[in-house]
Amino acid sequence: QMKRQPYYAEAKSVPMSLTDKQIQEVQPVQFETTNLSLPVPKEVYKRFGITDTATVNHGKIDFTMKHTLQFGQVTAIRVQDIMAQDIIFSNKWQVPVYFAVTCSPDSKIGLDDYLWFNGLAWRLEPKKITSRDEGGINPDIVEANLFREPEGFSKTPQYGYKFRRIADPDVYFDENTTRLMINYRSAFIRFALYHANLSQNKEKALASLDRMEALIPRAKIPMGWELASDIASFYNRLGRTDKYNELIAEIEPECLRALDRGEYNVNSAYSPFRVLLELYDNRKEYQKAIDLLKRLQTIIPNDPGIQQRIVMYEAQLNPKKPDTTGKK
Image 1 (cartoon, rainbow, N blue to C red):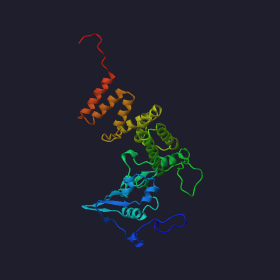
Image 2 (cartoon, rainbow, N blue to C red):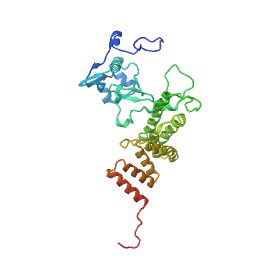
Image 3 (tube, rainbow, N blue to C red):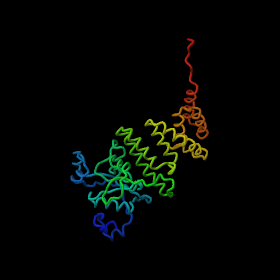
Image 4 (spheres, rainbow, N blue to C red):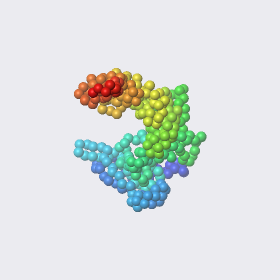
């Protein structure tokens, strides 16, 4: 269907090198990890606004395509991997190629270093993402999508998502739709991280977090204490203690209930113990921290680090008074 000419004149068919018969018969094939190169003509670099001489002169993007199936010692790739590779190489940069954020990590055939984040999709670009790019976010496009909500509908491409009545308590969302909201929240959070870490624009970072809550309120679309704890820490880092206190008032009882259910996850970044300890440390509630650590000791009795932290908090509760008598 994608290969055939669409019914409406404005659309283009998707370039593929395979015949219809080959597509019908395509099956997983044996495959080993392979280094691939996709040619990039100079006019394509110009179209993407890439002027770095070394990049342009390289004339290609290099990536490693790994197997996605294994049967004993035999490795292979799936039908979708074969088709994605064929489309990308047949396309030759004629039309934009996007991967939805809902794609599994192993669906991108190794192109991750060239997939730039636009909000709900990654766009393939002939420019490699570096550690300075905050996960390859395109800040202008993401900002337009999250903060611009165009009126009506357009037959030409434009940026701007429509957050229609998500916050309305009278509108019902089923479980699947509710789950998908994490993708919108992720876009807001990534945009906030970009401005907190890279552009150093605290106001834009806060505006992103605030708009996320206004459009997708957690009272309507629950986010879970794990994500809420990340956002609380983010607000605290940005100096919004009011938002931090508002969130942790909800997070603390949720974490305590998780512990009561035996959901310890002691080796996870989202262990209720870790989240609560950070919370108590920030609020200087040292007795609560000690009680929590003693509870953790019953689960991990031979960890010397736990006792060391207990001693540290006890010292905070009972600081030694300076000796003013002159006696040794």
